[in-house]
Image 1 (spheres, rainbow, N blue to C red):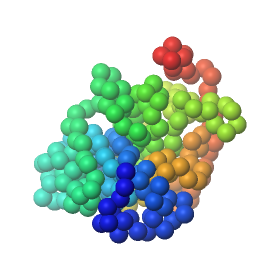
Image 2 (tube, rainbow, N blue to C red):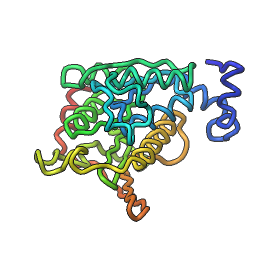
Image 3 (cartoon, rainbow, N blue to C red):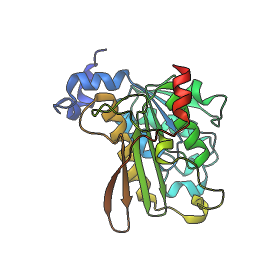
Length: 261
């Protein structure tokens, strides 16, 4: 898949990077990425993926733009209040880069549609704001063998990791799944929602950009990513920490994966 003269100029700063170059940019153009959520994390994620030239972006979100979103969800503007987020996101993406195809999914992910939706994309990036969706997406990616970049923010803190549990790492051991890191969701009511706890708007920009970087790295294949590593960010102290985690052999999903192979 060749680049047009306009695309060569648009992506010139990528093309001179040895780690990306023409072959890497063509990989980006061929790639299909699904963004789960067009909110605080999805907004910067989608903008940077579109700017990078990812060929097809899927956006799944069943919400509408609210005025209280605009403190952090910079993909949307004041005139978009009341519009479906997927429509506002698609319009903003096309304005940024007309070479990108946008596929909107104005729906709520559930056990009936998650696997079918995930299977249509090469990489999935989850920036959802609730535990039920995070576990649903991670399980769907697990069984459909799709790389997943998963992130979450709260208040002044954030975390991000990449999951490829359907493959083995360089050490020959199976990569961990999301449930190896977080076996069970917290009890209802123990973790306050964004509406209660608040969130620093610029923090979502930092983490959404990190998600985009991980997705691009997964597509092009350079450097060391976050598979088996959880990156933590404390915005109060401006401190990053990385924790390593491994496969949990007692994770019940492994039995499901074996039976599906």
